[in-house]
Length: 362
Ligand code: F6R
Image (cartoon, rainbow, N blue to C red; front, side, top):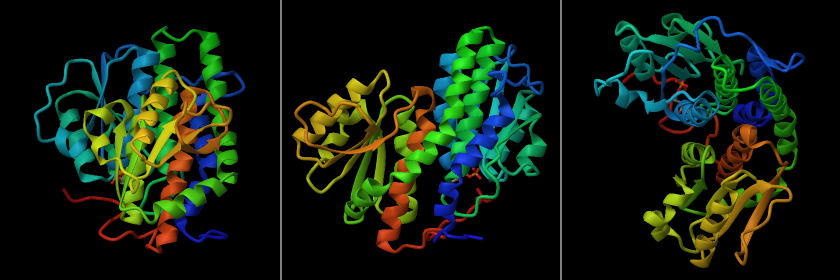
Protein backbone atom coordinates (compact mmCIF):
# COMPACT_ATOMS: atom_id res chain seq x y z
CA UNK A 1 0.00 0.00 0.00
CA UNK A 2 1.13 3.52 -0.79
CA UNK A 3 -0.16 5.02 2.45
CA UNK A 4 0.39 8.76 2.60
CA UNK A 5 2.37 8.76 -0.67
CA UNK A 6 1.17 9.50 -4.19
CA UNK A 7 3.30 6.83 -5.80
CA UNK A 8 5.20 3.71 -4.80
CA UNK A 9 8.34 5.38 -6.08
CA UNK A 10 7.90 8.25 -3.64
CA UNK A 11 7.21 5.83 -0.80
CA UNK A 12 10.26 3.74 -1.68
CA UNK A 13 12.49 6.81 -1.86
CA UNK A 14 11.32 7.69 1.65
CA UNK A 15 11.95 4.17 2.95
CA UNK A 16 15.66 4.49 2.30
CA UNK A 17 16.77 5.45 5.81
CA UNK A 18 15.33 2.10 6.94
CA UNK A 19 16.37 -0.03 3.99
CA UNK A 20 19.95 1.25 4.09
CA UNK A 21 20.12 0.77 7.87
CA UNK A 22 18.74 -2.75 7.58
CA UNK A 23 21.19 -3.67 4.83
CA UNK A 24 24.22 -2.19 6.62
CA UNK A 25 23.28 -4.13 9.76
CA UNK A 26 23.56 -7.38 7.84
CA UNK A 27 27.23 -6.70 7.09
CA UNK A 28 28.48 -4.44 9.87
CA UNK A 29 28.42 -4.44 13.65
CA UNK A 30 27.84 -0.88 14.81
CA UNK A 31 28.44 -1.63 18.50
CA UNK A 32 31.76 -3.39 17.91
CA UNK A 33 32.54 -0.98 15.03
CA UNK A 34 33.64 -3.91 12.92
CA UNK A 35 32.65 -5.70 9.76
CA UNK A 36 30.83 -8.99 10.31
CA UNK A 37 32.82 -12.03 9.15
CA UNK A 38 32.00 -13.09 5.59
CA UNK A 39 32.27 -16.89 5.66
CA UNK A 40 30.70 -17.71 2.33
CA UNK A 41 33.64 -16.43 0.27
CA UNK A 42 37.28 -16.25 1.38
CA UNK A 43 37.99 -12.62 0.51
CA UNK A 44 41.73 -13.09 1.10
CA UNK A 45 41.96 -15.47 -1.86
CA UNK A 46 40.17 -13.34 -4.43
CA UNK A 47 42.60 -11.93 -7.00
CA UNK A 48 40.06 -10.04 -9.09
CA UNK A 49 36.39 -9.12 -8.92
CA UNK A 50 34.12 -9.14 -11.95
CA UNK A 51 30.77 -7.48 -11.35
CA UNK A 52 27.97 -8.12 -13.86
CA UNK A 53 24.62 -6.35 -13.80
CA UNK A 54 22.11 -4.37 -15.85
CA UNK A 55 20.73 -0.85 -15.59
CA UNK A 56 20.66 0.67 -12.15
CA UNK A 57 22.34 -2.39 -10.61
CA UNK A 58 25.22 -1.84 -13.07
CA UNK A 59 25.70 1.68 -11.71
CA UNK A 60 25.73 0.33 -8.15
CA UNK A 61 28.49 -2.00 -9.33
CA UNK A 62 30.43 0.88 -10.87
CA UNK A 63 30.27 2.72 -7.54
CA UNK A 64 31.49 -0.41 -5.74
CA UNK A 65 34.50 -0.69 -8.04
CA UNK A 66 36.07 2.42 -6.52
CA UNK A 67 35.70 0.97 -3.03
CA UNK A 68 36.98 -2.53 -3.84
CA UNK A 69 40.09 -1.11 -5.47
CA UNK A 70 40.76 1.64 -2.94
CA UNK A 71 40.02 -0.24 0.28
CA UNK A 72 40.87 -3.81 -0.65
CA UNK A 73 43.37 -3.31 -3.46
CA UNK A 74 41.51 -5.88 -5.55
CA UNK A 75 41.28 -5.13 -9.26
CA UNK A 76 37.60 -4.83 -10.07
CA UNK A 77 35.82 -4.78 -13.42
CA UNK A 78 32.18 -4.00 -13.95
CA UNK A 79 30.30 -4.91 -17.08
CA UNK A 80 26.80 -4.79 -18.46
CA UNK A 81 25.59 -8.39 -18.43
CA UNK A 82 24.18 -8.34 -21.96
CA UNK A 83 27.68 -7.51 -23.27
CA UNK A 84 29.62 -9.71 -20.88
CA UNK A 85 27.77 -12.91 -21.71
CA UNK A 86 28.33 -12.77 -25.47
CA UNK A 87 31.99 -11.78 -25.70
CA UNK A 88 33.79 -14.84 -24.30
CA UNK A 89 35.40 -12.91 -21.42
CA UNK A 90 38.91 -14.08 -20.55
CA UNK A 91 38.70 -14.22 -16.77
CA UNK A 92 41.85 -14.99 -14.84
CA UNK A 93 42.00 -17.70 -12.14
CA UNK A 94 40.96 -16.41 -8.71
CA UNK A 95 38.32 -14.08 -10.13
CA UNK A 96 35.18 -13.75 -8.03
CA UNK A 97 32.13 -13.06 -10.17
CA UNK A 98 29.50 -10.92 -8.46
CA UNK A 99 26.04 -10.56 -9.98
CA UNK A 100 24.09 -7.53 -8.72
CA UNK A 101 20.32 -7.59 -9.17
CA UNK A 102 17.22 -6.42 -7.39
CA UNK A 103 14.97 -9.15 -8.78
CA UNK A 104 17.60 -11.87 -9.09
CA UNK A 105 15.84 -12.86 -12.32
CA UNK A 106 17.25 -10.54 -15.01
CA UNK A 107 17.96 -12.90 -17.90
CA UNK A 108 21.33 -11.53 -19.00
CA UNK A 109 22.72 -11.25 -15.47
CA UNK A 110 21.56 -14.76 -14.60
CA UNK A 111 23.05 -16.21 -17.80
CA UNK A 112 26.39 -14.48 -17.06
CA UNK A 113 26.40 -15.96 -13.57
CA UNK A 114 25.57 -19.45 -14.83
CA UNK A 115 28.28 -19.28 -17.47
CA UNK A 116 30.95 -18.20 -14.97
CA UNK A 117 29.92 -20.89 -12.51
CA UNK A 118 30.18 -23.51 -15.24
CA UNK A 119 33.71 -22.25 -15.98
CA UNK A 120 34.58 -22.99 -12.35
CA UNK A 121 34.72 -19.45 -10.97
CA UNK A 122 33.58 -18.47 -7.50
CA UNK A 123 30.26 -16.66 -7.69
CA UNK A 124 28.24 -14.40 -5.44
CA UNK A 125 24.91 -12.67 -5.95
CA UNK A 126 23.89 -9.37 -4.37
CA UNK A 127 20.13 -9.75 -4.60
CA UNK A 128 17.06 -8.22 -3.04
CA UNK A 129 14.81 -11.20 -3.70
CA UNK A 130 16.46 -13.82 -1.53
CA UNK A 131 14.64 -16.76 -3.10
CA UNK A 132 15.40 -15.73 -6.68
CA UNK A 133 17.16 -17.73 -9.40
CA UNK A 134 20.43 -15.84 -8.86
CA UNK A 135 20.25 -16.40 -5.11
CA UNK A 136 20.00 -20.14 -5.77
CA UNK A 137 22.56 -20.24 -8.57
CA UNK A 138 25.42 -18.33 -6.92
CA UNK A 139 27.76 -20.04 -4.49
CA UNK A 140 27.26 -17.17 -2.04
CA UNK A 141 24.21 -14.97 -1.54
CA UNK A 142 24.83 -11.45 -0.32
CA UNK A 143 21.38 -10.07 0.46
CA UNK A 144 20.14 -6.53 0.26
CA UNK A 145 17.31 -5.72 2.66
CA UNK A 146 15.32 -3.12 0.74
CA UNK A 147 12.06 -5.06 1.05
CA UNK A 148 9.73 -5.43 -1.93
CA UNK A 149 10.28 -2.76 -4.57
CA UNK A 150 7.15 -2.05 -6.59
CA UNK A 151 7.96 1.12 -8.54
CA UNK A 152 9.49 0.16 -11.88
CA UNK A 153 12.26 2.74 -11.42
CA UNK A 154 14.67 1.28 -8.88
CA UNK A 155 15.44 3.50 -5.87
CA UNK A 156 15.69 1.80 -2.49
CA UNK A 157 17.08 -1.36 -4.10
CA UNK A 158 19.89 0.75 -5.58
CA UNK A 159 20.96 2.33 -2.28
CA UNK A 160 20.71 -1.07 -0.60
CA UNK A 161 23.04 -2.48 -3.27
CA UNK A 162 25.48 0.36 -2.71
CA UNK A 163 25.28 -0.12 1.08
CA UNK A 164 25.94 -3.87 0.79
CA UNK A 165 28.76 -3.46 -1.72
CA UNK A 166 30.55 -0.69 0.23
CA UNK A 167 30.31 -2.88 3.35
CA UNK A 168 31.70 -5.87 1.45
CA UNK A 169 34.55 -3.76 0.05
CA UNK A 170 35.37 -2.73 3.59
CA UNK A 171 35.19 -6.38 4.71
CA UNK A 172 37.57 -7.30 1.89
CA UNK A 173 39.95 -4.51 2.94
CA UNK A 174 39.92 -5.74 6.53
CA UNK A 175 40.32 -9.42 5.56
CA UNK A 176 43.28 -8.56 3.36
CA UNK A 177 44.97 -6.52 6.07
CA UNK A 178 44.74 -3.27 4.14
CA UNK A 179 42.32 -1.53 6.48
CA UNK A 180 43.58 -1.10 10.06
CA UNK A 181 41.14 -1.44 13.00
CA UNK A 182 40.88 2.32 13.63
CA UNK A 183 40.09 2.95 9.96
CA UNK A 184 37.60 0.07 10.02
CA UNK A 185 35.84 1.66 13.02
CA UNK A 186 35.81 5.07 11.33
CA UNK A 187 34.29 3.73 8.12
CA UNK A 188 31.70 1.57 9.91
CA UNK A 189 30.61 4.67 11.84
CA UNK A 190 30.55 6.71 8.63
CA UNK A 191 28.31 4.15 6.92
CA UNK A 192 25.85 4.16 9.80
CA UNK A 193 25.60 7.95 9.49
CA UNK A 194 24.03 7.45 6.07
CA UNK A 195 20.45 6.66 7.21
CA UNK A 196 20.25 9.88 9.24
CA UNK A 197 21.77 11.97 6.46
CA UNK A 198 19.40 10.42 3.92
CA UNK A 199 16.48 11.31 6.19
CA UNK A 200 17.71 14.91 6.51
CA UNK A 201 18.13 15.16 2.75
CA UNK A 202 14.58 13.88 2.23
CA UNK A 203 13.22 16.65 4.41
CA UNK A 204 14.88 19.58 2.66
CA UNK A 205 13.43 19.09 -0.80
CA UNK A 206 11.96 22.51 -1.65
CA UNK A 207 14.96 23.53 -3.77
CA UNK A 208 14.74 20.24 -5.65
CA UNK A 209 11.06 20.82 -6.40
CA UNK A 210 11.93 24.23 -7.84
CA UNK A 211 14.69 22.75 -9.99
CA UNK A 212 12.37 19.95 -11.15
CA UNK A 213 9.85 22.57 -12.23
CA UNK A 214 12.46 23.98 -14.62
CA UNK A 215 13.72 20.55 -15.72
CA UNK A 216 10.22 19.57 -16.77
CA UNK A 217 10.47 22.13 -19.58
CA UNK A 218 13.84 20.93 -20.87
CA UNK A 219 14.28 18.49 -23.70
CA UNK A 220 17.86 17.53 -22.79
CA UNK A 221 19.63 17.41 -19.44
CA UNK A 222 23.27 16.63 -18.65
CA UNK A 223 24.42 15.10 -15.36
CA UNK A 224 28.07 15.47 -14.39
CA UNK A 225 30.18 13.84 -11.70
CA UNK A 226 33.70 12.68 -10.95
CA UNK A 227 34.84 9.57 -9.11
CA UNK A 228 31.88 7.71 -7.61
CA UNK A 229 29.68 10.62 -8.63
CA UNK A 230 30.26 9.66 -12.27
CA UNK A 231 28.22 6.42 -12.10
CA UNK A 232 25.69 8.28 -9.95
CA UNK A 233 25.42 10.91 -12.70
CA UNK A 234 24.59 8.12 -15.14
CA UNK A 235 22.05 6.75 -12.69
CA UNK A 236 20.49 10.21 -12.42
CA UNK A 237 20.22 10.43 -16.19
CA UNK A 238 18.70 6.95 -16.41
CA UNK A 239 16.12 7.76 -13.74
CA UNK A 240 15.12 11.01 -15.45
CA UNK A 241 14.80 9.32 -18.86
CA UNK A 242 12.79 6.43 -17.48
CA UNK A 243 10.05 8.28 -15.70
CA UNK A 244 9.94 11.80 -17.20
CA UNK A 245 10.87 10.80 -20.79
CA UNK A 246 13.31 13.71 -20.95
CA UNK A 247 16.52 12.91 -22.76
CA UNK A 248 19.40 12.92 -20.30
CA UNK A 249 23.02 11.79 -20.28
CA UNK A 250 25.49 11.29 -17.48
CA UNK A 251 29.12 12.19 -18.11
CA UNK A 252 32.38 12.12 -16.26
CA UNK A 253 32.89 15.84 -15.56
CA UNK A 254 36.42 15.77 -16.97
CA UNK A 255 35.17 14.27 -20.22
CA UNK A 256 32.97 17.28 -20.94
CA UNK A 257 35.54 19.19 -22.90
CA UNK A 258 36.15 16.15 -25.12
CA UNK A 259 32.83 16.55 -26.85
CA UNK A 260 29.65 16.96 -24.85
CA UNK A 261 30.36 20.60 -24.00
CA UNK A 262 29.22 21.30 -27.58
CA UNK A 263 25.69 20.52 -26.35
CA UNK A 264 25.77 23.24 -23.70
CA UNK A 265 23.42 26.16 -24.33
CA UNK A 266 20.87 28.17 -22.37
CA UNK A 267 18.22 25.50 -22.84
CA UNK A 268 20.22 22.55 -21.55
CA UNK A 269 20.35 22.23 -17.77
CA UNK A 270 23.53 20.75 -16.33
CA UNK A 271 23.18 18.97 -13.00
CA UNK A 272 26.49 18.56 -11.19
CA UNK A 273 26.97 16.17 -8.29
CA UNK A 274 29.69 17.83 -6.24
CA UNK A 275 30.26 16.55 -2.71
CA UNK A 276 33.21 17.88 -0.74
CA UNK A 277 35.67 15.20 -1.78
CA UNK A 278 39.18 15.16 -3.17
CA UNK A 279 38.01 15.98 -6.70
CA UNK A 280 35.66 18.83 -5.71
CA UNK A 281 37.93 21.56 -7.11
CA UNK A 282 38.20 19.74 -10.44
CA UNK A 283 34.43 19.44 -10.75
CA UNK A 284 34.05 23.12 -9.79
CA UNK A 285 36.36 24.18 -12.60
CA UNK A 286 34.33 22.10 -15.08
CA UNK A 287 31.25 23.99 -13.92
CA UNK A 288 32.99 27.31 -14.62
CA UNK A 289 33.50 26.08 -18.18
CA UNK A 290 29.79 25.26 -18.51
CA UNK A 291 28.63 28.53 -16.95
CA UNK A 292 30.98 30.51 -19.21
CA UNK A 293 29.10 29.03 -22.19
CA UNK A 294 25.73 30.09 -20.87
CA UNK A 295 24.65 26.69 -19.56
CA UNK A 296 22.28 26.76 -16.57
CA UNK A 297 24.18 24.90 -13.85
CA UNK A 298 22.59 23.26 -10.83
CA UNK A 299 25.21 22.22 -8.33
CA UNK A 300 24.14 19.63 -5.80
CA UNK A 301 26.66 20.02 -3.05
CA UNK A 302 27.29 20.09 0.69
CA UNK A 303 26.23 22.92 2.96
CA UNK A 304 29.28 25.11 3.35
CA UNK A 305 30.98 24.01 0.14
CA UNK A 306 32.26 26.92 -1.97
CA UNK A 307 30.69 27.85 -5.30
CA UNK A 308 32.90 27.83 -8.39
CA UNK A 309 34.61 31.19 -8.57
CA UNK A 310 32.92 33.74 -10.81
CA UNK A 311 30.32 31.30 -12.12
CA UNK A 312 26.57 31.72 -11.84
CA UNK A 313 25.39 28.43 -10.42
CA UNK A 314 22.21 27.48 -8.67
CA UNK A 315 22.91 25.49 -5.52
CA UNK A 316 21.00 22.65 -3.97
CA UNK A 317 22.56 22.05 -0.57
CA UNK A 318 22.46 18.77 1.27
CA UNK A 319 24.13 17.80 4.53
CA UNK A 320 27.91 17.41 4.47
CA UNK A 321 29.04 13.79 4.69
CA UNK A 322 32.10 11.58 4.62
CA UNK A 323 33.06 11.08 0.94
CA UNK A 324 32.85 7.30 1.46
CA UNK A 325 29.08 7.47 1.95
CA UNK A 326 28.41 10.27 -0.54
CA UNK A 327 26.91 7.88 -3.13
CA UNK A 328 24.23 6.88 -0.60
CA UNK A 329 23.36 10.45 0.34
CA UNK A 330 23.59 11.98 -3.15
CA UNK A 331 21.37 9.22 -4.56
CA UNK A 332 18.44 10.93 -2.82
CA UNK A 333 18.46 14.31 -4.64
CA UNK A 334 19.09 12.45 -7.90
CA UNK A 335 15.99 10.28 -7.36
CA UNK A 336 13.84 13.15 -6.13
CA UNK A 337 14.74 15.31 -9.13
CA UNK A 338 13.54 12.59 -11.48
CA UNK A 339 10.46 11.98 -9.37
CA UNK A 340 9.36 15.61 -9.05
CA UNK A 341 10.07 16.25 -12.73
CA UNK A 342 7.89 13.30 -13.72
CA UNK A 343 5.11 14.42 -11.36
CA UNK A 344 5.32 17.89 -12.90
CA UNK A 345 4.98 16.36 -16.35
CA UNK A 346 2.15 14.08 -15.26
CA UNK A 347 3.70 10.84 -16.48
CA UNK A 348 2.85 7.44 -15.02
CA UNK A 349 5.64 7.35 -12.44
CA UNK A 350 5.20 3.80 -11.16
CA UNK A 351 4.52 2.25 -14.58
CA UNK A 352 6.57 4.19 -17.14
CA UNK A 353 5.79 3.39 -20.76
CA UNK A 354 7.61 0.48 -22.41
CA UNK A 355 9.22 -0.71 -19.18
CA UNK A 356 8.80 -3.85 -17.09
CA UNK A 357 9.96 -4.31 -13.51
CA UNK A 358 11.95 -7.41 -14.28
CA UNK A 359 13.53 -8.13 -17.65
CA UNK A 360 13.49 -11.88 -17.97
CA UNK A 361 13.83 -11.90 -21.74
CA UNK A 362 17.09 -11.28 -23.60
C1 F6R B 1 16.12 1.30 -13.53
C2 F6R B 1 15.80 -0.11 -13.39
C3 F6R B 1 16.48 -1.09 -14.28
C4 F6R B 1 16.96 -2.30 -13.46
C5 F6R B 1 17.55 -3.37 -14.37
C6 F6R B 1 18.12 -4.53 -13.59
O1 F6R B 1 15.40 2.09 -12.65
O2 F6R B 1 15.01 -0.47 -12.56
O3 F6R B 1 17.54 -0.51 -14.97
O4 F6R B 1 17.92 -1.83 -12.55
O5 F6R B 1 16.53 -3.84 -15.24
O6 F6R B 1 17.14 -5.18 -12.82
P1 F6R B 1 17.56 -6.14 -11.65
O7 F6R B 1 18.27 -5.34 -10.62
O8 F6R B 1 16.28 -6.74 -11.16
O9 F6R B 1 18.49 -7.17 -12.25
